[in-house]
Length: 447
Image 1 (cartoon, rainbow, N blue to C red):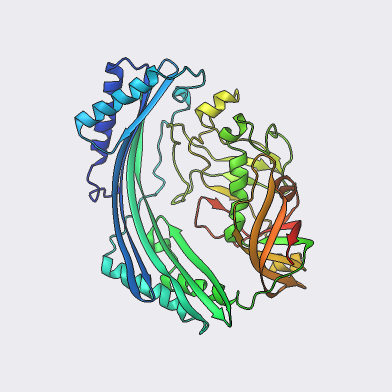
Image 2: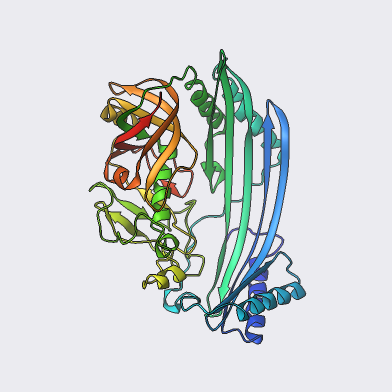
């Protein structure tokens, strides 16, 4: 069992608080109730140009309670764990429920879907990092970036962060479950210049366990190299060409898909994937899996926000949309059942077609490699896509020169069906994982 002694409250105390909340809700006459009791703390150190910028410590706790009176719902929360505060919070939620209109889809998750066996997914790896060591690691990270190229003369800083948390979720259908987790990160961003031109770029690493983080010197080196290679960027003309999304930003394409396939967007009829279940929405070779049980995964969880058991499943197979991301409420609105995705997708993985990054450049031949996206010009209702971008022009399958001040445009429905290849160069630093993604044709607007 992991050592939870660093927390102010033990798991048993969190369970006791959850039980008190549910007992008081029952005493008030609630027909159902659920609660989440959580606590977390962490340390973040930032340096800039070798000097300490910030040292931050955070320690948070909270109780959220949802009370149902029939199909009327009320919610309240508090950061005070004292018995009186807990009672007042439950009473506030109950009062809200009494004056809220009934909703036939409101209620707890179906009891038969609740998790029974809760596996240990190895999500908790505390890092007892002295602040002095954190400062030196952050300095080493920044120094590695500045040493890459003499033209890198300024810095937005380097940051090292370590966070720990644990929680218990319980409801009046008898479910009680919770676990601790950790998340650690290292990040660096530097600025380079030549003449009047300035460019910036960054790199970061995130992991559940500190030993899985990239070495801080490597994080800094990558940040420095990415900045230096962008110097002497040019503008290009407007044209239609193949576009290769570099792996770190290709994950955003998965994010737009997850949002469009989520229950909230679907029942509100604000998704370009409305009524698309069973249809081919990607290129025929595309497979997307939701994998909640990856050990140490940044999106892993044995149950969702409502206690529903999670399960690995194909969301897209052979390009066909096989499933949505549904919690209990959105599922009922759609006449379906929860998929264990209250709170969203888990580890969403886009399978590779086998090419490495140089192989993708060769397949691209002539076109645009995008390494940075700017702005949020994505319409989730229509799928229209238009974002500022920077990256590199590619000729004959090789990077020719950096480009900036351009816009890439298309429609996600067309882009997904026009995926040509997916690289094996996965950068696993979030719950959405994929390699670089090559789109057959997009509009690039420049000069």
